[in-house]
Image (cartoon, rainbow, N blue to C red):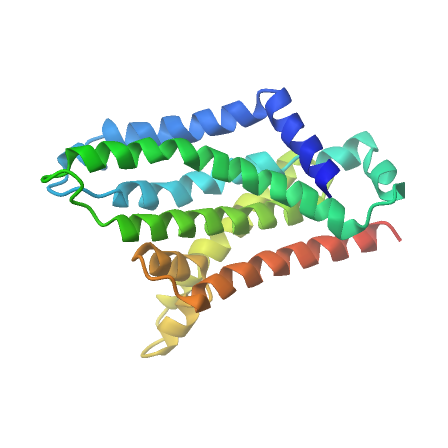
Length: 243
């Protein structure tokens, strides 16, 4: 697993892929947070990073599928997947190596955004007048959200040998898992407590919960369960395709 993880990380940063992903993420969030007036932090009356945590999930919907689309699709296209599977390497080790490398890239992309926190910290009146607990919770929620999207992307890539198809499928699944249940709960057939129950099935509900700075065990269990579910599906796909 470690060898696969190192290989994937070297592949990300040995080419432009890793740098482009990180650069695009920082460019989009930077423009939204400091330039575009509707989201600019400079227009807020108090120190907050709420705009970052509202924008980032939508950016992840495009960027993470772009990172994961090549994970298995490229291996199938070039015929190297069969070689990997013949090595003394279990399927789950191969999957975890590719998954953790994609998730690590997401976390690396988040690290420079700490500069946004440092800037807002200095701009607060008085200095440091902001809810650091909620910001920390939001960062953890965003990292977990990235982990789920990476697992979905790995699964989508295992389904096809076409990288574009893998990208589009992963983007669709990420959108549905994150926002789909929220939109579904708005249907008139769900009322009373029913709409809340439907929302609780989606990522957005648990992401918003963690973003309030409340580290609820139920939210962490939810994120971990969704990650495990899609990695489990990926293993089953590989087993079926290689029988």
